[in-house]
Image 1 (spheres, rainbow, N blue to C red):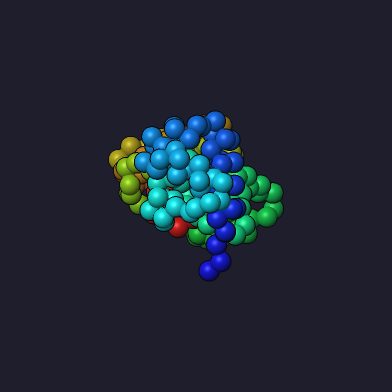
Image 2: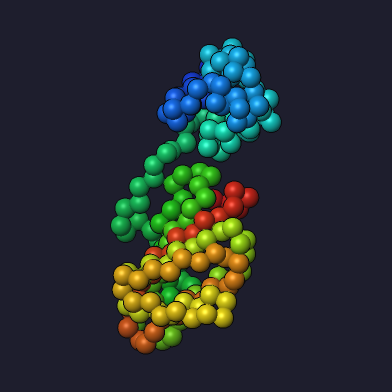
Length: 191
């Protein structure tokens, strides 16, 4: 595996610190590395240990990989309409992923499409209570059951819930429905 050299590592650390409007002392207080050592890292004179780099990454709000990958990881990812290849989840239900362009991102977004006709439902099992999901109805009418509570949602409605309870999304009637689903995930999950 190829990784960046100390000069490029230092450039990235300095650029990100300045972009965040932070002083060396502020970063020092967040990650435990001395301002002097951070200055040496930024000037490409030394490289931190992997543990120190991980603490530095947390202090600067980035994944450790951002500082190690040969190519700079993107800050922005654009998804153009028609690029996503829908995945069939059932006889009249498809899902198109709208995220995935920023490595290490903790946000996922997908569009669920309930086609006209047969009934369909989408289920997400209970998970980490710190994770959240937002459901935004783009078209049609759906019911969203979170645990034992069911809510009917129409075009323009949104519902936010933690993943502490299971979620079941169902179309109401036989007309098409489209729902934008955004979720957070823990940094332990694959992007």
